[in-house]
Length: 420
Ligand code: EPZ
Image (cartoon, rainbow, N blue to C red; front, side, top):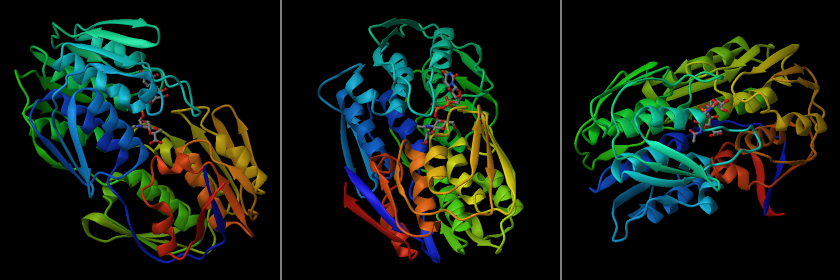
């Protein structure tokens, strides 16, 4: 296993974000809806992407992944089983269920299980697919489904925590080949879902309302292949915004859509940073010397993303005052708090709340990465803390941040990957 060794660094310059992991994963699942060739550009080379490609191969596709472009076409063997050994390492593969039910009329997909940030239920996925007429049984940790007679209908997909990104993806994909019209009320509005809808329409699907809480899908007989450019990773971009704030560095972030980050940029402005939008895919983040405390509540898009909560918590450790973070999506997503407190932070967690007493310094320590975004937060902490920090188990980072040490080193970061 690898570790990162980091020292306090003054950063400057420009960084280009990669294609979005969370947008690409459902696109890869959507290729199961056709036997024709699909080509997807701007796909990041990440562990999670490679896992999904392995699952797509097991499900009967021929896959090529070169220089950020994925080419997928029908393979010789046909499959409908997404095995536990792969699904458990990458829960997003559960969104193969909808396409398999719609295209192959049957599916056996391992339940993803929980993870460190929370229980991660899939009840909304199953509810939505059953409302479309799928017969779903849970046996020995697998979801076994029959999708012979999928029929469109009005489906309410809201859950206890609001909308669900991948449940919306699963149901929308299944509805594209169902008979008749489906309306999905309380659909997720994330840019990744909007992008998936555009991809599906390019395949020939009849969809309207993408990006809004009311999606309308009219079933078609068949979907074809297509070529598509994956959107940029707004969470990677937001991670660099948090890094600029925590290290008091002026950074230019290229290749990301600033309009996918409004809530994050508003928060950075409230903390005292100057934000300049440069065209459609570039922004300049200039922190003022003293950061101000803010209250952050994580919400479904367009609210503040839960995937940036840990990273902004590090920046708030340097704000002059007390901030309150309310985690409304994953109330247990605070694994990073204990590690940050070991670095000298003063954060109190109580249920879904974290109170950050800012204004002090952080000091280097040996810390343990626990999940993708908490690991990114620890890297930001290591670049802003006095003395040496070592972040262990960086395989968590490799799941979601392409070439992170190269990109950070290009900004002047003192970061090195070593064998643990
Ligand atoms: C997506 O996960 C993202 N993953 C997550 O990013 C992100 O944190 C999450 O959306 C929220 O924005 C991918 O896109 C691959 P949800 P998803 O269903 O779709 C509850 C990262 O770091 N819920 O929108 O699985 C759930 O427990 C990852 O890149 C149910 O109750 O998340 C949560 O509280 C981490 N029943 C809330 O809804 C369900 O059937 C939102 O979850 C499904 C979800």
